[in-house]
Amino acid sequence: MSAGVKAYAAVDLGASSGRVMVGRVGPDSVELTEAHRFPNRPVRLPEGLRWDILALYGGVLDGLRAAGDRSGGRLASVGVDSWAVDYGLLDGAGALLGNPVHYRDARTEGVAEKVWATVPAAELYAATGIQYAPFNTLYQLTADRSTARFALAARVLLVPDLLTYWLTGEQGTELTNASTTQLVDPRTRTWAHGVADRLGIDLALFAPLRQPGDPAGTLRPEVLAETGLRGPVPVTAVGSHDTASAVVAVPATAERFAYICTGTWSLAGLELSAPVLTEESRAANFTNELGLDGTVRYLRNIMGLWLLQECVRAWGEPDLGLLLRQAAAVPTLRSVVDAGDAAFLAPGRMPERIAGACRASGQPVPGSPAEVTRCILDSLALAHRRAVLDAARLADHPVDVVYLVGGGTRNALLCQLTADACGLPVVAGATEAAALGNVLVQARAHGLAGDLPALRRLLTRTQPLTRYTPRGDTGRWRAAEARLAAR
Image (cartoon, rainbow, N blue to C red; front, side, top):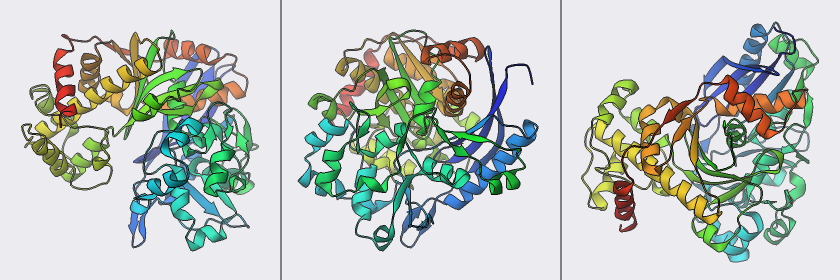
């Protein structure tokens, strides 16, 4: 390894797969390679949908072993990020009380209305800045409070904090992920005690807050023995919400940009210095999540490539490359659906549900897999357009360019359609953006000099970027928006 270059392991867990990546970072170099990838398959039990957290932890250990093999057994640090909102409950001895509940589980149906009876939705947004989603941690905790396992709980650990605890034996709550719970004040960047008190939620159940870059312990001797790593190996808190890490890896060179983090979800919005807590922002369902170095991720959640993933699963896993080529030949905007509609949240029968939504809105009903795929991609591009333009208007923050990172960068058709819909250039950056941001935060904590803009300048010098120029005017996209609004 070159002088000044250190190896870091990024544990990056998405909603459909996990991976452990090795990042080699120096003052003028960033190289990311995959050490191990493993599936994330939720399990439907009689009591509901659950994460197979033990299988995920096993995948993490396998990945750290592979990362050690790639780095001669030496790692400068390990960092963990994952999806948001879900958590594990621990008893007083630190033992897990059952598998964490999946955010797509039905247990939170109707819970939000019960919460709003005590803290009205407008007051809740003004205090926390978090958009309404039926699976927000606040609603999950409210649903959980009547269960026997919750009565035994002494600690709530969000998923990346739970895995970090198993790796180190130390407990903490990383801030960027904590901000998604709807229990953090985005202005003070601390717990929203007033909200919690009114709802009877004991914030002492959460471990102390950590900032990205804070030490999170060292790998336990048992972990070192199982992975073959040579200790001590520090574990560093990163932006443990995968979107927070992905936004770190947005290769922006100026302030007037929007970003879209694509994967199972699309997270589209702006990076701001202060939250937007207006009633208009709440009505538009924008969220104010916390990011690195005092930033706010002002964004909208869009259903994302989940729609296509579910269709591909229903079709028996056809060749995706061929499917996308066939979709490119389907006329643009023939049919579109609202990609943010909660009707698409649950798994199962996605092609039929998309066809039904088109039928109900009086549009041509897509029949073939290529037509359904084109409907999905057009709908995602349209949702990206609406999110970017709405965010710019609500935050009074002009946008000159859109950066797209994550799994969607592999989909050139989606990237081009997003540029066409927004009427702005789209620059596609890192596919593994969350892992890349995870590694950069670790590297900075362990000696790499630079603020957030400096980290991004390093990315623009070292990572391949693809630019998509918008084609035509945006009139047909405005017309498609009007069709959806008229439903």
